[in-house]
Image 1 (cartoon, rainbow, N blue to C red):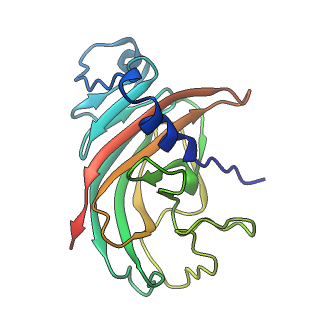
Image 2: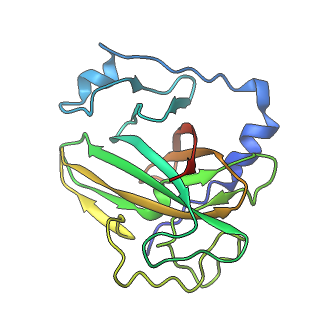
Length: 206
């Protein structure tokens, strides 16, 4: 069964807990996490502090199993032949992922979600490739047809050990939004929850 991890709780976490969360961005040259990773995307590496890691556009977010970097993001009224619903724009995010483990991992389109505002549990979006007959949030694309679209990550894909991949995550978001957070939450096989990684960024029209 396809894994679904909706981070609506993150909006409540960011707004409700406020000052109880410490956001720290660090440049790590020699840390235990970095030493465990035999390969790395390099650059400004951000790890978690007290369960949360916060970075910016271009930072390398170093989690326990992988590294990811949001290279660029822009807003548009369409992506190739895909046009969003009335009142919506398209947010296109270029993301590089590196599997730092010695075993393969499965990457899902819902692993990287977008949030804004933080005051409501509806202020989020998952990539337009995600399909679920029970989904009913405003940004969900119910009848997505990806025929002919190029460059996007697949709904799910296997990333080989120490393999680096690059692709696009495309989201439908409300018009007027320009400030976003890309969210990645660690989940483990025993269903426990790990650290939360957040990339804060601004997206403008291309």
